[in-house]
Structure formats: structure tokens, C-alpha cells
Amino acid sequence: MKAWRFHGIGDMRLDEVPYPELKPDWVILKPRVVQPSVSEAQRAVGLAISGTETFKKLLAEKAPIALFGHEFCAKVVEVGADVTNVRVGERVAVESRVPCHQCRLCLGGSPWLCRKGPSMGRHIAGGFAEYTTVPAEILEVLPESVTDNEGACIQPLTGAVKSIAAARIQLGDTVAVIGQGPMGLYCLQLARVSGAGKIIGVDVRQESLALSRQLGADYTVNAREVDPVKAVLEYTEGIGADVVFEAAGGSPQQGLAGTTTLPQAMAMVRDLGKVVQVAWIGNSVTCPIDSWRERGITYLTSESCPPKLTKWAVHLVATKRVQLAPLISHVLEGLDKVPEAFHITSHKSEYKATNPAQVVVSKWDSSG
Ligand SMILES: [Zn+2]
Image 1 (cartoon, rainbow, N blue to C red):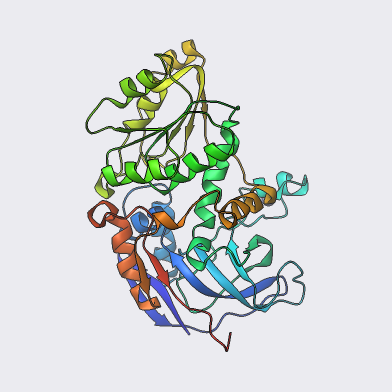
Image 2 (cartoon, protein in one colour):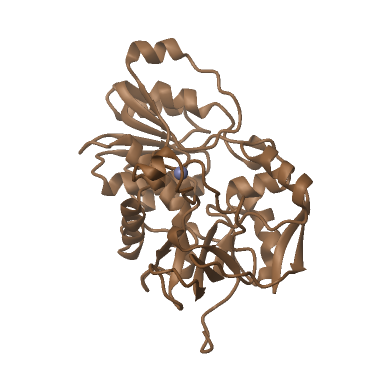
């Protein structure tokens, strides 16, 4: 079988590798649709972001090595002898973290909080292959109404669910979302179904702002044309938003907002409001922390995503309350297109892509 392996930084090759061995509590999956995450596209070329040093270390120790591809939808083709939660033939999405079953959190009954277990794409190869093998416990079965393309987005969607869970939105809260890429647009839609009142989408790209309005923003702000802090204050009678999601920061080399948007989020939130950092900013940020203290601002990052919330995310997609399809603009056919998908994903603004580029690895046929 064929699988993409990294031989070095920026050097990925479609190699012939052995078919995976099946362990008792694991399954063998045939990937259907896979997409590189933005972070993976950055690490693949060695950009200095969180996880890049680990990537380099893994390459130094183990290259060639199959890595990445944790955002994917697959069909179960074999199940180990101890597997009870999925069956052969079912389509699944995959969680990114595997519980270690040994730490205090795992033994205390909250394995979804575990930070010690292996993670998909780093310790366990994901969907950039004809077949892959993963622990059955991290699978979520997809109903028929979720397409393969949507299924590949379930993992990042659960990332946004974690941010929403952290925010504890109150009914009628005014919510501002800085960055209308996939994570921002997921937060926007999840805030809507969580009872938000006015929602304000902020971005610098007209096409993203159009999508933002289409997906439920009441107001949009083009931060290239106006000061986004002033604009949000104007939309909130000078008070500021109750909750601000920062989903824009990151490497400017890849079209992201750098480190400026977190201080903006702090400036557009109301006194005693909440700021949630959604983005991986990839750098230190200078912020006026005494002002936050004085204003009583709560700064939050993401919470965990217990199985109940993963099922909620899948249900919202299945019932079209959260729309993923309008974000997917680039779909490539065939496993050999993976490098092109990495290129588009790391140059999204050039390609006017919102979602990462997807690759259709396999389709359903009569042979299964
Ligand atoms: Zn654990």
C-alpha cells in the first residue's frame, strides 16, 4: 500500500509501505477524505510554530516517517478482537488525542482531559495513506447525512467546540469573532446555536466577511478599512462585546494576523467580559495585563471536548445547524495530490480558500 512519509523538512514522498498490523483494540481505516491542518502545513515547511521542534526531532530520529493527517474521514475496514464501539463498513471521524489510561485524569474518570497519551498525526499516522490504523476509542461514527468532505472537518470543528465550551455563552450575549477562517466561522455558528445575541465577524478579506454574513453574523467589520476595536464599540453602544473569540493570530508568512489581534480582542471586550484565544498564535504577545486586571477581563483558552460534545458537533453538522460545506472550496482527487493540498493550505489567501484543501483518497464502490 502507499502512504506519504516525510524524509525531511519540506520533503514528503509517496512511499510503498507495509499494510498496517491490527491490534486487539484498534481498527484499520481506509481514509476517504483528508485535509492538512494549517498547523501541519506550517510545520511541514519548518515554520517556527508550536510543535515544529517536535516535528524536527521526530524527523531526526525516525525519518522516513508517516505523520500528520489527523483531519480525516474514513471507512472502517477491519476491527480488532476487543473492539465494540464501531463496526466494519461504518464511516468515522477521529479525535486527535488518545487517553493514556494511566494518569490521574484518566483514572479519575475524565480520559478526555488527558494530556499524556499519544496524539493523532504526531505519534499515530493519520489519513495521508491508503490505509491507516488507530485506537477504536477515538472514533466517532458519522450518520449518512454527514458527507465525507464534512466528516474530514469534524476534528477541527470539535476544536471550536472546546472554545465555545470555555466561553460559557449566556443567552443574548454579544459575541465578536476576530478571524473568519474555518475556526472563526465555526465559533460564529456554534455561538449562534448556543444562544448568542448579536454576532460581529471581523476579518480583512471581503470574501470571508461575505461568508460570515451568510453563516449568521449580524454585522461584519473589515479590519483593513476601519479600526475593528472602534467598530465593535460602536455596535455595542460603547460597552464592548460580552465575549470575544480571537481566531486570527498566527504567522503572517501564511496570511495570518501575527500577534496584534489578541490585544485588539482585549480592547473590544466589555469590562468583566471574556476573551477566548482560539488561534495558535505561534509567538509571544505583548499585552497591557494591568488594564485587564483593572477591568476584570477573563482570559480563556479551550476546554476539553468530552464525548457528549463531539456527538453534539456531529449532530449540528448532520442537521445543518452548523454548515461546513460553504467553507470547502478546494477538493483534489487522489492520494497523489496531497503535496498540492499542503501548498494550497499554506497559501490560502492566494487561492482564496477558507478551509484547508481537501484530498479525496477513496470513494465508496460496490466492493466496499
Ligand atoms: Zn491520561
